[in-house]
Image (spheres, rainbow, N blue to C red):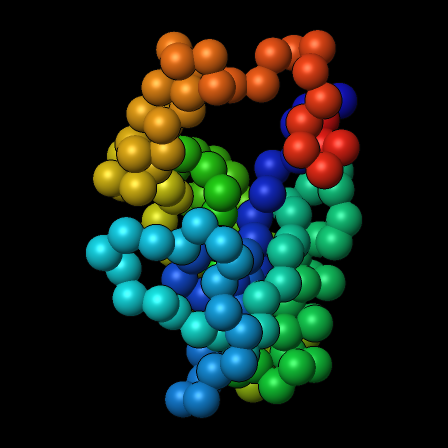
Length: 143
């Protein structure tokens, strides 16, 4: 079984979402740095395959919430067949079901300075003994 390939249906950052002039939801913790605080009307996670909810479900939830402009962000480091073919095809199928909507797909994370900062922080944590050891429990019981 492969790892799930997330293809999120959020605006600007991470899941799939839509923007309104008066947005409601704020991005989760950790959205910092030189970026303006972006607020979205709705954010829905969605996955390409293996894991639910799938892209159609996430897209349908956004359409039901009144979203007409949907921005999908794929949680991949680099471009590949999922980001160039599979996710756009799934979004196109969803739009056929909700013709009053439009979607945009962002580029993968790539070598964005924020990604490099996060990787550097994780390496620094490991080198200074602040990383989680495999046999230690993760916060909130995550593993």
